[in-house]
Image (cartoon, rainbow, N blue to C red):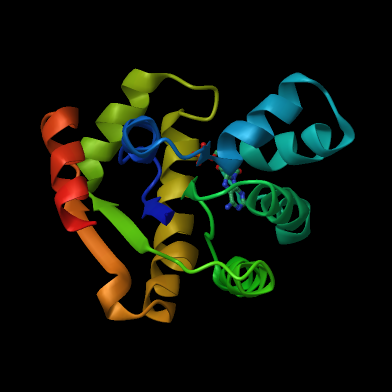
Length: 177
Ligand code: AMP
């Protein structure tokens, strides 16, 4: 099973990916988590990525492509949470899937109103969850990530409203797979 979890920052992608990962016993791969880990470890890539993360900007595409290539190559099925996020990344993604002879199962698109999302993120309180950075991340999502949806066959996209109980959202996602 090869799932993509897409949606605005703060919409609940991490939470729902984790539940699906446990249910289907497939790895949850989140570039955001991988990058934060590299920042913590102060690696060369981490130091470079930090400048973008703290401003809420996307890190350069060439930083992530090797990481994504590596995790896809070494996993048997996945939930990719937060990748691809722009047109260049979706090109890389299709290319890697082709090279690895993998078939995309479904794209899960989580949606919720902006005010709900902002409230959730402010509660989460991550370093990049300040009002200003959140605004930037939502803008980038709308400008760069939303347009990539048209690159998937319509039948592959499952849209789920990410509002209410985590468990019932999880059940709804499963019913669409
Ligand atoms: P997230 O944990 O998904 O909210 O991501 C946190 C930050 O990591 C983002 O604001 C970006 O700076 C970076 N990031 C995560 N995923 C990507 C991606 N696919 N492309 C570029 N940057 C990313």
